[in-house]
Image 1 (cartoon, rainbow over the protein chains, first blue to last red):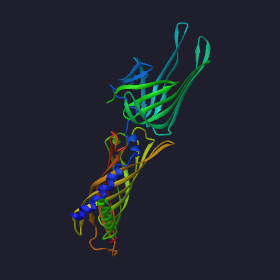
Image 2 (cartoon, chains in turn green, yellow):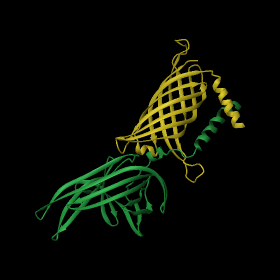
Image 3 (tube, each protein chain N blue to C red):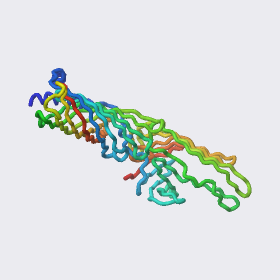
Image 4 (cartoon, rainbow over the protein chains, first blue to last red):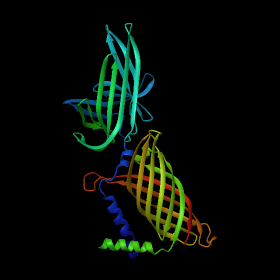
Length: 211
Length: 182
């Protein structure tokens, strides 16, 4: 019996020393975490310059014969599809000329490619020519995102470890006008979007409920 | 001082070799818990050597992502374990294994990849059936082996902080061949 204890003691000791090592890499934790949860009833509360916004998953539905997930984003409808980790959002954009609405864009553009892996890069572009009252207008919608870093964040909703920081750039060109949005987004494991800084405007998660 | 003596005893026991064996084994590696949500079951290949009641393993598994088929998760494991025999005779042996593992992880998605490691604890039971009680090549005695292992991968960000460690579990059910050399 004494011999067995002599055998086991150093093994257990070595294990305890190993386990107590600091700053281990959490690659497995990241690999086994959901960074983009979209389940029925999930909700997130964000704050931008003292204005609170609620994002809530409503459930599954169909739009343009496409099965998708329906969200309320600040009481506006938002639709997402999940095609093998390719998260696409319905971009619906209209312009009003002479009291008539003309559809400029009605496309499922790629927003995120799951799973997030450091260095991963994706983009999507939509180009079209729209004829309005006899005149042709060119439009181009371009989205680029890249996973650039893994960070820990301490925000009002809590402390989040191993969040992916994503660089974001979106450009919409219509005729001579250009809309440009660029900045960074942070996604936390099991929660989703926790922070974004777009065109120097900061949005932070203040509360959430994810199943 | 006690730990020093224990380590010294361990080294001494490693040096006095009474039995040596080598083996190969294959079988499914089944993720459980959170891992099962993201990765499919993989085939694992393992080569190992054993001396006295210790076993040193190298395992390799390649898991495919469930969310995206283009994601792969490579697991290289080095495992040192102690086999405690419940039953041991000329014909067969049955024992419990307990040890530690060092796991190298590579996660690949298209051209992007992440590398890291995780320490773990491995435990399970192993059965060995000697195929020939009389050696046919003097000191080479083949045996059929079957093992059920659980490799508990442990992450500890900071032991002193309030951040709790997390674990992921991998079950291996393996069969293979073993050759006793001594």
